Amino acid sequence: MKKSLLFLFAISAIVGMSTSLVACDSSSAPPAAAVSDPGENGGRKAVPVDYSAGRIMNARLGKGINFGNSWEGDAPNCHTDACWSNPIKDEDFKIVKDAGFNSIRLPVRWQRYSDRETHTVDPEMLAGVKEDVTLAINEGLVVLLDFHHYVELNHLGGGAHRGKADTIALFQAEKEHFVALWSQIAAEFDQFPDSMIVFDILNEPTIPDTALLNDVLLSAYQVIRAVAKNKTIMFESNNAAKFDRLGVLNLPQDGNIIYSGHYYEPYTFSHQGHNSDCLGDAVYSNNADADLKSYVRIAKTLYPDVNGTDVIPLNMGEFGISGGTIQANKASCQEDHQTLPSAEAKARWAKETVAAALKYGMSFHYWGFTFVGGFQAYDRQANAWFTGFPNALIQ
Image 1 (tube, rainbow, N blue to C red):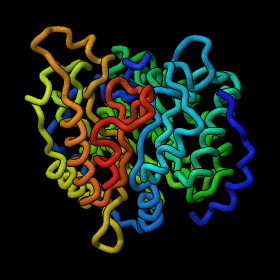
Image 2: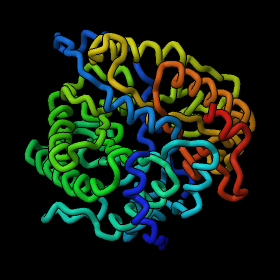
Image 3: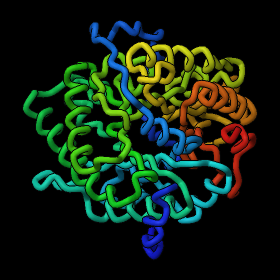
Image 4: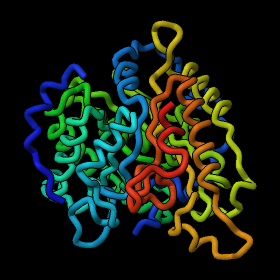
């Protein structure tokens, strides 16, 4: 993929302003447990923070969509966004902007082909991601830049990806590599306007030990903040970024941060063909209004704003439904009596979930734009949005 960097000059002017793969780790995550008791924060006393800077940026993120299964691919000897056969096209940013979206979430597997001796990102990948960020910003889209699929770190931290944890020394080495990569990434992308980019520290952590999790996230936060003093920084919690895990984090008293949760409830409906039976519309369910309301309650208990009304800004970084007319998923649903959710039910679930997010002041990023294992909202082959989209998301 070759893209022009001719529009770099425009950045400073905006300062005021394998398709069966599923890139989201949530595809293998278990259904979320009941909402955690806010007291899970270990008895810490809530300290009100002025989150106005984070709220402003969260409002700028607004209504967004993930450009998944591109830069987070892991095919051998592949240094581009085509490693899962889903390269991002230059025109995609205009399509998304014209549909009414405010932002994109750009998942990147930054550790792929990174230099472990110098702790530097693969130069070809870095250049390509910069091109995409430039194209998005030139279309007026805010970019949520994500560190995606760090399975090695999660595994060594005792996460769910590859079984039991390895030695402490190996984990510490992986953590140091992760933190050093973020130091470079933050420095490289700090050149873009503060109003146009957000750094998402780690997608869907599965490190169960909360002390290790907090050490990883806060270590990365510190190096990011050291070089990107005015950028908004986003945190996700363990159990693959469940909203109700906010209480296990020790977030810094920084008013320019956002907490992001991922929402695919219930998995029996959202992940049909991906570790869930294919029962179609018969198992339709949506409890987003009650769920998101409870998440805001937790946030207000743990991370209130100094104004006494608001809470730490909240983002729904991934949500979506597999199914519709996507042939790729039907291999998992071969039996005649099995079926996938209809396109209409998929759009209905998305619409109800977005309505709840808007009601409770959350920004959001739908999973995803195109070729994301049946979750996609846009039909690349037909060059058109699937039934019910993008209207289900742009309300």
